[in-house]
Image 1: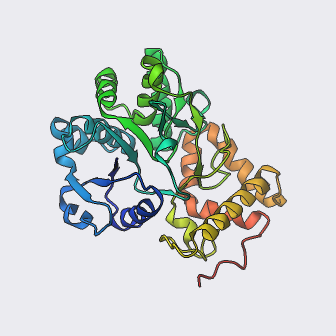
Image 2: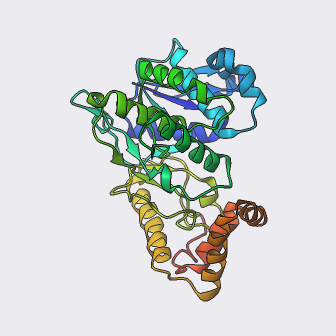
Length: 333
């Protein structure tokens, strides 16, 4: 089974691949779609055969639209839907972001059993709160498109690898082609909502996502559905910086102590989630996040706040105002 990545981040991709080598034993090939000037950089030495494809070959006739667009969501959608036309891509494959890292061993039955696919969602697009980023705009635009076509509105961009049927992906591309005129469509949600509706016999009922650090911090948005377990990590480099919750932990896979490291990550992130949800913040912390969340009603204002306070700064503020259980644990060994 192939796992297919779209990436322009060599170091993160290389680290992620080692996690896959060790924890996804059914994966027999890794495919990286990257910019043409990085093809040589992605030729990793790995126990798993690695195939690297120039994104220009994948995009074909969509190359001009891809280059002309400045919308990250739209460009990702063009690339991933175009995989349906690539001869080197198998009939079934795992599609993943380059920073989606398995935390536990993942069997093939996690993705398919009884000849049916599993699909993992994390939100209902009707309730998506954000409006400032390309991703937010894509979620709201995808809602409009799905509703217009009469499909369900769950969001499947769960920041974890998911299984894709290549032929069905081609159907999705054709079905939504009229909606791809610059619209930032969420390709994950288009694929799975279409598939669940048109081919219900091919899918199990939707399951809640199992991703640690999606979102990175609980102040980003409230859970719509809560994971019952964490099988993957959505890797954020900023969480491993000094004074952040994973700053004393390695980013690379360490087979000698991986289970212990994983338990530590889950415990810390869960503790932070519980503290935030319980309102265990001092007055100034409550005021900061109350103001930031209220600004969500005014996208322009929230953009200005996010311009003043980067995600890493907001995360640090949350951590500072929370229980403080991670302070003093931030020196890397």
